[in-house]
Length: 299
Image (cartoon, rainbow, N blue to C red; front, side, top):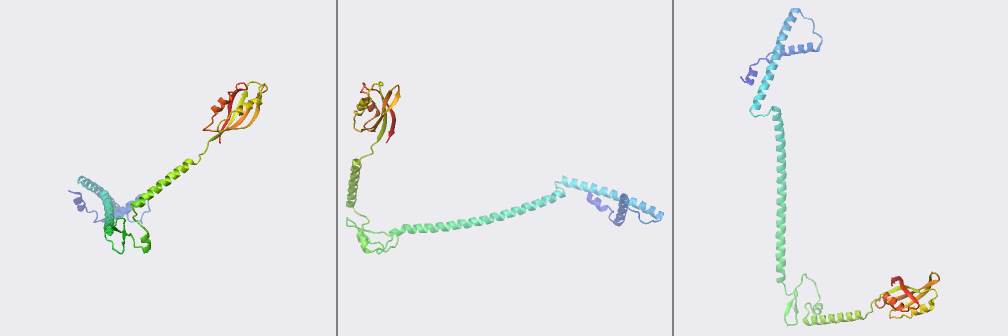
C-alpha cells in the first residue's frame, strides 16, 4: 500500500469543523485562557470525551502524515529525483542559466554582424585601392601631345616631357630650360668642381694655424750667498732660441742670506720645451746650481 493510497483512505478531513473546534479548545486550555460559560455536567463530560477522542485522532493523523511524507521523500530519493526544495532551486538556476545563454548568443550574433560589416567595408576599400593603382600604372603610357610637348636632345632624337599635373607654363620658359642636359655640361661641371676643391685646399694649407704657447716660471738657484745674482740673470737671459721670449724676473729670499732668481718666459710648445731650457741654463755651472719649474700654464 503506497503513501498516496493511504492518504486517500483517511477520513480526517470530512469532520474538519469538529477537529478545528477540538483543537481550539485544546490550545485554550494549554494557554490557560478563561473557561467558557458554564454548561451542564453531563454535556461537559460528553464534550470532553469527544474532544479527547478527536485530539487523539488528530495526533494519530499527524503522525501518519509525517510518516507518509518521510516515505514519499525516501522513495523519490531512491528513484534519483532530488527533493522538492532542490527541484525548485534547480529549476530557478536552470532558468537563470538559460537566460544567460540566450543573452550571450544574442551578443555573439550582434558581434558577428558587425564583423561581417567591417569585412565588407575592407573589401570595398581594397577594391577601390586596386582600381586606383591600376589607373596610376597605366597613366604614364597614355599621354596626349598637347599635355606632353617634345624636348629635343643632343643626339637628334625627341623625348616627350611628362607632367604630373596640368600646370600652365609659358613657352619661353620651356625653351630656356633643358631638363635632361648633356654630357658636355656634366664634364664641365665636374672640372669646375675639381678646380674649386683644389683652390680651397691650397687656401686652407696657406692659412696659418693656431700656435700653441705656454707660460713658464723658472726658479734658478745659486751656489751660495756670495754669487753675483746680476751676472746670474745675464747668463740666464743669454739663452736664446726660436719661439723663446723672456719676461720679468725678481729675487726671492731662500734663507741664510741666499736668494734665488725667479724669471718668467713664454715659449712655443712645438719649438721650445722645459728640458731644453734646463739643459741650456745649467751650462753656466759657475753661477747656477739648479733650475726648477715653479709654474707651467697654457696660453
